[in-house]
Length: 408
Ligand SMILES: [Zn+2]
Image (cartoon, protein in one colour):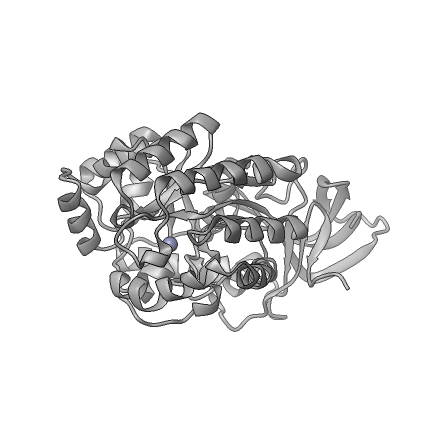
């Protein structure tokens, strides 16, 4: 993938997009060496009218839910009981886990997603299969098993000792693999399925090894109420604060029903919100208040939240983010949306070397076929974000190497 000619769309900031209608992109090894208006030089491949984009960033996705996309059994707590837990229990079978891990990684690559934060099932061996599949494809990810030791089916409960031992084994095998493209994350599922002791030990383990943590926070009012009562806490965030889980390497999915005090503390801690608007719609959870994150400059990344979210395609979820904001009287710009799904997401997950089609970035890219009528930037963006019938990603590359369609 050395020298390409294509249309290019990328974010400069949350306020600024760059669109080049005819550009040359030079790849040197794993990196982008040059992006410039096309100047007549010979190229190895002319991808026009395809639009070259940075690979997308999915900050919240569940790999063992790959087969239950579209399972309409919400709201949240019922959906977990009826759809999620029975499916996740199947991941005790490592062969099943291996098969679904392969499918999951295919789905990510086909969606143009090159960096993701991936929750596994509770089984360390299933997380190992996930890492192996990600490594085989070269995708970037922060991944790990979920931690649960109470109030879920017994087959999905793993006490703290074996859970932490499993994390340590995964850390030694996979953390930092492939020049840091794979990292172990620490994922207590949410306060309702974890003991205080498990969350504390998870927080300490993550701190000791400087790992990202992630959990669900304030997705529904019922969940908030149960968390407060069970842990005798003033509010939901306090439960995680006590466990040492609220800091700048923490990603909180949803954040739909937080108090002003919780928002202030999240902002002060420098934590990240994984905004999952399609999941929030599908489970009827409510809408993440956009003015609260933007007013406090809280970093936001987009999560598909498959399978409560109905698509692996980050642009499809960005469309839901637009709808969510509009319901709150806020019109999000295409730059803001694309920022959340690419460069902003990459920065929020600690990957400063990806998320833009720009010199010096890793060549983690995808190629989108906008409709033939999409002749200018506005039409290309409209097609990418809002025309759900537009084509998918024609091609996805990591480090300049094609990963979708899978090379034959
Ligand atoms: Zn989730």
